[in-house]
Image (cartoon, rainbow, N blue to C red; front, side, top):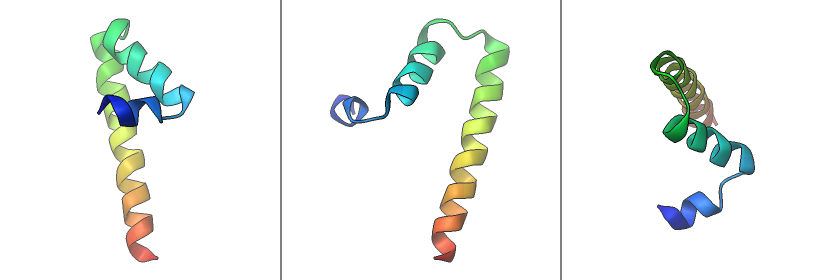
Length: 49
């Protein structure tokens, strides 16, 4: 996992750092929903192709 994490864009690294260190519980729930929605949308789009 660390190897693939190093290859991720800087914005993902910063988001993960924020989740681990500073994010209050309310933000964690919102972040989780946003990320899950984005991933589901992207996976559904890639299935259509």
